[in-house]
Length: 292
Image (cartoon, rainbow, N blue to C red):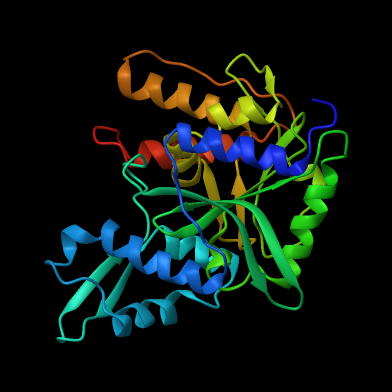
């Protein structure tokens, strides 16, 4: 396993992702990405379309509303509804993602999409929800420092992560042995803001196969994007929570909504107490029966 190639890592990951609920789709270039997005958008919004799929004109109206935006603005658009005028003059609200029932999204995975920009880049593994690329996985062969994958994503961000790729929420970097995740940003991303995932007992999950079977499970990944990311309006930045923050919020919300007991969350200095308490308050404020 010490000499496992990047290609073999990629093949194994694709196989695993299809086994846990992703549909494999071939997206060789950006035009194919747009075509797939159009198709999935029709499927995802089928209940609103009255058997009249979005036409090319209507789809272009949607692209006009969402392309060319900042990562911060794209993150807000992803979680909102788009109002467009159909060709027959009627108004239509289009949804890009179901952030409340996160398992009810369309999950796809593709590999080796080639995109031309300042340079031509080929991405390893891209996870799509409802046709939008939301998670990018970059791999390096075993034995290499996985920081090389982080640096590669930095180059992609400068050169070709434009258009629909502005919707990327989370990046994953791995050499098979060590795996970390981090949020996208309009600002410079420091390697210190990349995180290992862990279980509830704070045992690190670093192996790519184990990471995929936990963090990348379709429902869990959609839940992370829907519930455990924060759009910081003051800094105009996108943030993803560390594992212990996620487990703390889940425990707090569970205690508040399922019991009549009191409770507290203990965090050490510098562990992100403000973000944890903010997210817990945000989630509870949307719960029925919680006094505002």
